[in-house]
Image (cartoon, rainbow, N blue to C red; front, side, top):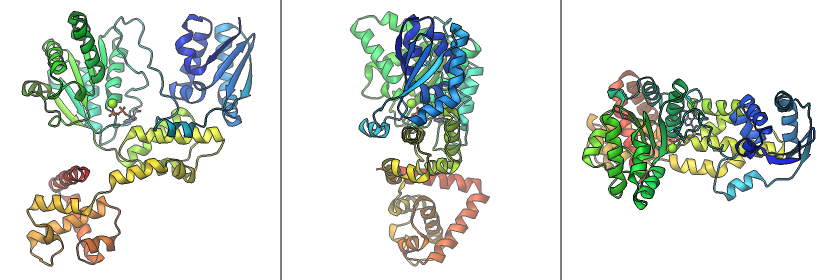
Length: 471
Ligand code: ADP
Ligand code: MG
């Protein structure tokens, strides 16, 4: 075999002409799992000469990890597929500091995002799916449970009128794209011949423009109209008042599939109301299931980080994971990006991750998060005041009638929940001492626990406060 130099990142994808090494690296990737392969081997450079595989790595720590954990797997894979009992040697080469490069590249999470996953070969329809987004690695939690269950239901009852279309919306980074791919992957696993297509809204629009320019709407329609399941991500790029052409084409695609009882799943980072849909499209689009993914709880965030840690096989303590999960609350993509940033830094520098390192390294993201979360007392008073029809000054007045006192107590309770203010600080905001705040907080909390209707009302008020506060 002649000398060959390649990178872990491109070995599997581009060595297809090299029939000897492709199966070796495919096998290694399968055994290690995609995340571990991406973390440890994709960034490495390999040189294969005679019976020796040289691996170039950024530091001794990295070498130790591969040597101790993965070398035997690499050797076995070579033996199995080439019959060669190879030697593995290492060379340390400086690489660009990944933390700096992350900062340079405006927070691209490290390590590099995995290449699109292989599509099942026998199927002649390219589904454009990423096999690393699956149901089995999606953490179910109260905030996404309904969406998750409906996604599973769709797979089992494709095109069933009741769940068609399924419309999932949420703020960015909360798992919409993951669920869409999970649906597609599962359908293909159950039925490798199924015609499934994943497209982002942007891709759909680009396809539409290409078709319009080349006056070839037929091939566009052939592609989109003969599917068993159409997974359309980020529909906000396709519909709305400024998207007349693509919205009409989408409507046509939607109707064709829908009338043929084919499954459609849509996502959006806007609520259906915010999308400002054409009313005809709106009534059809929302005639199936509409569900929101809400912000994950801290337990969910920790569970997601643990799963990621285990999948990349990196030693990082639960205390550090909890610290990251406490700090990053609004976006799972940022949560994972932060973990990768920390892991990359620690493996490059050969240090064990600690809370102190995380604090330092993630300072910029943590501050951003705090800003996003800080709710102002005024927003709370404004929303509660509107809800209960009382005036702003009533919150600070001495009036004790129940119609004023109860909303005031609710506002104090919400201030303890939604801000970082201390009890005396909250007391000052309401012209009271801190024991009154404690009393109000406990009173409202008890009612929330005892009365689900009241709890729902409070949840709605919180959502309104967050919406007002964002403006
Ligand atoms: P969205 O499409 O809503 O912006 P994504 O689906 O791209 O969000 O999710 C962002 C990242 O967070 C992805 O890497 C995804 O795998 C991960 N993620 C989101 N929700 C979960 C979850 N419940 N369990 C595991 N990973 C999740
Ligand atoms: Mg997405």
